[in-house]
Length: 148
Image (cartoon, rainbow, N blue to C red; front, side):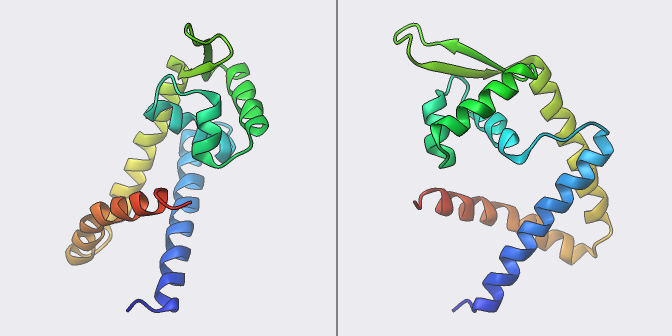
């Protein structure tokens, strides 16, 4: 059985890892960071091109008016395009701009460089254990996504 302390340590560690990677990657990229909520929208649209604003709200567990504001801001920034669905003109379909694709790719290159350097500092057994955990973290994400 997993203890409450182990669960707390895992959650705290994953949260701090995410925050530290984000801060350090943004510093390396040397541009104004996007708010986390905007990043979530961009990553969801990248994974599901043509997704509707309503579906973004549902998947992110966010109010539709909040998503509308995020989409408007990302569109104004030149990172997102809104297209009317030809079958139902009331529905807006979202897709990334080339500028958004480049920005995400640049961010991922810098994040990968940070992770590569940090992993190189670990002893081989620890590095192997961390890398071997990746598929299990994917499974954990899948399990969490399936829950309300």
